[in-house]
Picture (spheres, one colour):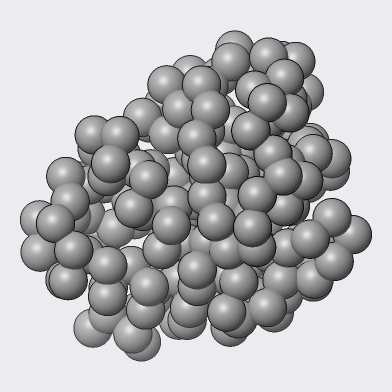
Length: 175
């Protein structure tokens, strides 16, 4: 676990849809269609109401983040971080923007704990190591420069190998 100001940052290995936090982040597309990967798991476990809420909101701009209720998941909210166009790829800029906007919308909604996946590293094809660098840099900039109420941030990696890669980068960046 690391701390930036009053916010704890922790890496976890597991299924993001099983966490009990205030909000989880969905690695979303700009149409807010819950397809495969993290979004598919959210749709499957969270129920159809999440997609219905997304349909009422979307589409959104690349790099934006929007919020819905958590459906049947053990979370109050889902923050949908649009890091790619439907069928497209995540870029460094869209990743940075979608992470920043997820932190912003979480803070605006008085959320204290947020769990993020490795946004853009699945279907959107973004390199895992670069994702880790961008996410920790964005967390750092946001937490040091913005007024917020965020107390716990998690990055949840599904596979052991992804967890180890993120951990290596976090140790290097934060120590």
